[in-house]
Length: 540
Image 1 (spheres, one colour):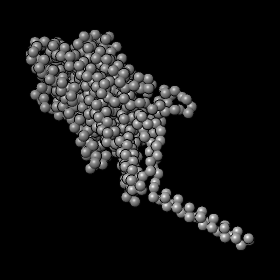
Image 2: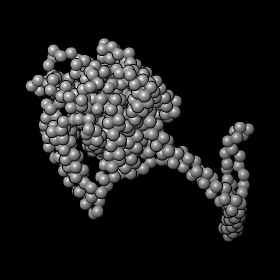
Image 3: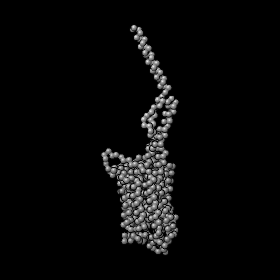
Image 4: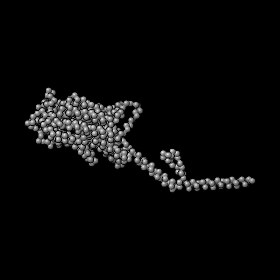
């Protein structure tokens, strides 16, 4: 009995082992695969038994579908990149349509309304300098669409004042437009930042290159409003003048005045010891015999108000809406406080401080070419009807120069491009100082305007690329600070323009160029030294 018990135990163990092996073999022959059917009429799981080959094929097809879905939904897909490019170009085109007419009127203000026009432009840019601080608040409250629509309405009012002129109305519209221009620039840059940040699938280095590429596309498109706006004004002047050859908006002198006598009238009679006498009336400072045809102002209103409306509709209808991501401040400080803190941190940056005088100089030289060159040179010698064509040359040179600076920067170092801009700007100031404008030298006006546009393109491209590379993750606040300083320089220049003679302003512009180029040269060589170290590090 004692020997039979181990034998029975051994048989029971063998039976259990055989049963386990049989169950294992059956599991190898069949694999259970569970699918979740998401149709409308099935809401629960069903299990199906497939052979191993069918199960492998089913799992591979399922993995492929998941990969396709991930590629379609990936933020770095081709569709997302195409949308980013589309939004950047649409925003640039809308800016051309909305601001082209404004910059045409800015060029004509000094010739049409020498005192009131320049003072209104000074107030406009003064209020724009400080209203830019309110941009983040407006961006969170109403967004880019309603901001663009409101600024478009203000620009339309500014254009209407061009025909229904009254000094008080001109000043009021300029102040209101200045209050809207600052937030408008901040909202634009915030939208571009959110638009480009959707390409977050790439690495940081590649993202910086893609970001700079889309910024170049936007600025090349949007900054061409100088050219397109003055091109439209030139066509209006040409064909409206043939329809009404007798009308003249600004004619207050006789036709028998020669070009040289007209130039002497603009300079010698008015300038006394470097300043304009205050007892002379404002209308006396404008003396071109051939002015804008009377029906041209109506055509201006039709064309520019229509373009402003189209630009506003492009933003309101076709521009893709991107949600604003609000950053939670751990101390729950206001948006205004955060904006002021960002500006303070930018201004204390040692590299940015070296570029601050150059930012202001860009505004001063733009105000000079649009306010003083158009009045003291073009309008006096050629007539106010030639202002648009001359400024069109400036706009074309500015657009082509911006593209050329980018292409040359790939083969030449930044200090070399800066030196070329300095030589060109200094030569133009010397020509303006020594040259007496006469009608027979019409080609010189276009050469000066084109050269000035090229210099402006050099300064703007170098400074904007510096800010974009210094603040790759949060560049909208530095860009707005850049425009604030630029507008501040324009406000100061337009403010003193009606009271100082052109020779004094040319001398002041040359002095400020010398003061601003010294720290900016230090900055460029510092950036060049840093890039050399970075290149050596990459080689290692």
